[in-house]
Image (cartoon, rainbow, N blue to C red):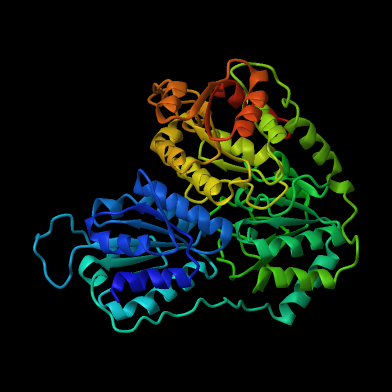
Length: 545
């Protein structure tokens, strides 16, 4: 058996469905082995997009997504998306090729030390130097990528090793990961503190955004009546439509939800991840904090929880719930006024008719059109904050955003992966004009795959979030404006269907038509971020008065 065949057999044993990437000559034996396998190879137009797609697959399934690139520039093009997966805790296995390592016939042409280059970005990086190593290294790569905290693992398969003959075709079977449970002592100590709290809040962080955690947390909230809020990457674990939800920590320490946080005497922090901006600061505070997570807290001068419950989060929440009385936290009078003001302000512009459209109106219109299981994949930009703050999610992973690396260019590739995985669900990609153009070539990939996908481009002909920051610092408007192509013609050139919104009441019917027709649709949506900035500042001033 050829080593590349053994490699693919090991991937099949791991349950790999897709490999996203762009191969080079150093990958041709591996590519031929994939051709004869059950794995679908998804050719992309840029390696970065391939890794974004693989990361999104890992995020949605909990199983490592796989991407492929050649040596040199192919591998370097992966770097941003690998960092995206690593910081965002998305399991991914990255495969790169390399020139023959047993003999060199081309000097240093295209050769970089990719294994060492990857080491700061991934959980593990290895070069395969013997074909017989493949089963162990592949099993190890998937185990490391998927175990808490999930992330990226890199394997380099040189071309001479790929075509090497191996005698044994045995591969290691995929194994279930068994997580440790928190101690009884930690559970008991946390339960006592919870029982004594008068104004408790539950915080849902990025680490809680796993499928097996949703039900225990829902049961905990329903039994105790406790109010909860979430970070941006914790959004969707619990439904934003229920009365216990008070908001998303999205903008600043003066935003609505933070007023409730300041009044709380206890915060039960589930799934805290330090890659996200802290939703509260403990410095100088008398609040008690319980840290419930797979891993112990990284103690900082702004975060030093009094109690840590370390182990499987779902199991910890179940055991805590068993020890608490029904409706223990149902008295919400201490936060009712804040909740009413928050709700009124957040929905005050849902029907605003101005044009170009305000993001608040766009978010409200998108929510009207999307089904509960519809997926909105956000790129990075000012619009991301408005979706995080205003868009109510009803199911996990139906609002995909990145608040870890927070890179532009991920929104469209991530949406393509979603549309590929879930052809019967609505999938919407929301991008700024800047972020869209970073990977817009993947429209061809979506068309070639015959996907159903709708893309909205927030068009303000500039880098809107940075302009907002520039204005907030009272700096001159400089260096952040650009020109765009005609996005309708641009979509048409790929065979997609382009739409341009010319008044605010056109967005909903345009989206509905696009989803009903199927195929790839692109919507050019003019937005006015100058109004947006003023509205945001006015909102925040409400709590300063």
